Amino acid sequence: MKFLQICLGIGSSTGEYACVWCKVSKFDRGEISKPWDFYLAPDMKRSISETTVLSRSSKKGFGVKHIPLLTFEPEHCVPDEKHLFMRIFDVLLRNVIDDARNKDIMAKVNEEKGDYLEFLVANIRKCGVFFDIWTPKGQGDLDWTSLCGADMKKVMKSLPDLLMFVIHNETHDTVVKLWKDFWHIYQYICSNECERRIGEATCTLVKDWITLFLSLFGKRKGYGPQNITPYIRCLMYHVPFFVSTYGSLRQFSGQPTEKINDSIKTDTSCKN
Image: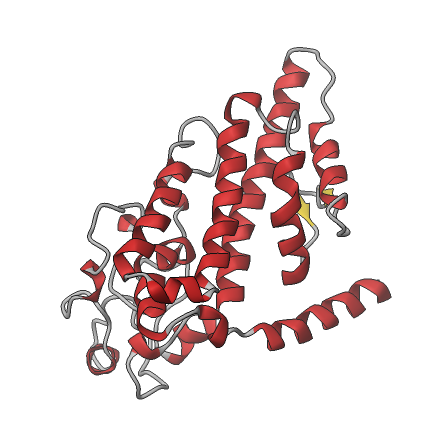
């Protein structure tokens, strides 16, 4: 998405108006009650002409930073399925790590044996990938191994069945369903099946998943409306248009480029 933001003259994903396809504010990303085609309306979707005008204005609005480098409309810029998957996976993984870490903290308070974070690392390794978690020197927050796309898929498919007793029991089933349902959605938008269904049906499928995600708000860290990233929102309000208009996202995949990145990352890890 960063590449599209640069090409279309839009600010970064941390900005208030980060979406390259519409003019939604980051404060409204958690709003999922709008119809599936709400952001396709002329007054909501982005256009090259409007972005060009805003780029030349002294008061650049809707996150516009510079004149677009492209001359075709954003609605013809299809998101890369692999990148979309990876960035949403990042959110789910971070939340599971926070879940296990919190369980360790609670165990320590109750003077019980913890090590849930260690169990999580061990179970992720059981998925067939190298993974570790550490605390950088001089920092209090955790850091962990950056997985390549292929390894993320291995973890996505196998980890949900390895989370029992690793994360909080009360919300375990919901978290597992969240992971499995996302994997189903990802496979769906990359298959020919999505081409046979209308955009509204795809939007509803994702909406149900986001509703499940938000149901953990207040129970576990990382599941609030503010955690609905541009990527998660894109999955609900823009991917349905693209798959119903152009077909499976698989045909627009940037996976060949990602494989090169994975090879470089692997070589670097071996040298280190």
